[in-house]
Amino acid sequence: MAILPVLAGCGDEGEKQKPVAKEEKKNPAAAIRLITLDPGHFHAALVQKTMYPGIDPEVYVYAPDGPEVTAHLALIDQYKSRPENPATWKEVVYTGTDYLNKMLSEKKGNVVVLSGNNRQKTEFIQQSVDAGLNVLADKPMAINDGDFLLLTKSFDEAKAKKVLLYDIMTERSEITNILQKELAAIPELFGELTKGTPENPAILLESVHYYYKFVSGKGLTRPVWFFDPLQQGEAIADVGTHLVDLVNWEFFPEQALDYKSDIVMGKSRIWFTPMTLSQFSAVTKKDSFPDFLKKYVVKDSILQTHSNGEVNYSVKGVHARVIARWDYQAKEGGDTHYAIAKGSKVNLVIKQGKEEKYLPTLYIMPVKSRDKAFDTAVSAAVMKIAAKYPGISTQKYKDGFQVIIPDSYKVGHEAHFAQVMERYLAYLKDGNLPSWEIPNMLAKYHVTTQSAKTSELSK
Image (cartoon, rainbow, N blue to C red):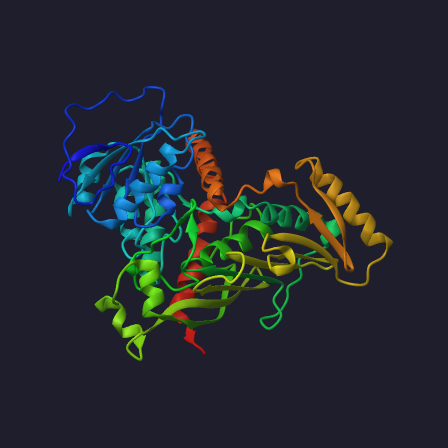
């Protein structure tokens, strides 16, 4: 076990690691120094795809030795060796079974980045905050109700320690979500958000993700624990976190929600996606199922992955439904997103199917038949938004309009991590999160963890 700088090309798992001869001087102009703790998910590397003013390029990594930290460092190295705008990070790595205690005792940085196995993540958050460290955590910060209780205590401790605990909500940076939010805030166009019913909710969001995919141009290898709901979380408790967050952020903007009084839980369900051993091997590079997954295996070679989930609930009397699904591989396109918000005057719909060439596309559709008043309201709303987002326009689509978005706003999922980091850096500079953020994080994780607790299995 040793501390070492990882230079370009270092990634050989079996290579002996050499200690640093002497510690290099810190950059006095950089107020932020990153610590990456147990980076088991590729999102940890995406945080560092971009360089940021005010962040020291020297990043301290603490992790158990193995393929996950090796994969993380390989991605960082890829960003450092790209021909255009190469990153200049200097990874200082400690590997060993005592990596958490080592990080807490050394406290080489002041912002802990967490993206990995979710079973221990809430505990890592709590211990980092207790040590007086800021935390930027990938979703989810909690996957069960026990985690949720610990997370509430961590937020209280963060307030007492005057550190900022925040999660990485990349979907807030996706332009169609942003514009759906903006349009829903214009009553002359949208009217009022309807209440809906459990059977016909006012807000419906559904995402479809795929196990076999490419990240930064290379095929993704997933850790075997990714397929264990006790380690990764059920679908709603995992990727569903983004969808529940969008419900709050888009349609109850800057409102501090009280999960005890504003949220009413409805029915939740889960269902499986079958995965063959050969498919499992293709995405994990392992030729057999580990023991902890064998209880989910049927017919000796079919893994019943806990991939899909649905939760129905209401926020301040508005009924919402969130669906998160996983399939093995997309026949065309990639991950997709569908969202509809039902106003008294129009419905705002995001689709990402074949018709949209698998690109998220926003539509404005009248509740009643199209008339001159509808056209006028759309024109006025788009003119208002275009003042903030130049180049936004519309074109006719069936009975409504499609929102035309310049390509300059379509930066892609990987770039959204930098946008989240930039927001977080602004909060660190101010010393505070917006007043509604913490209550809404608690409301979000209340929904997702209660869904995981009460979900019924369906076919």
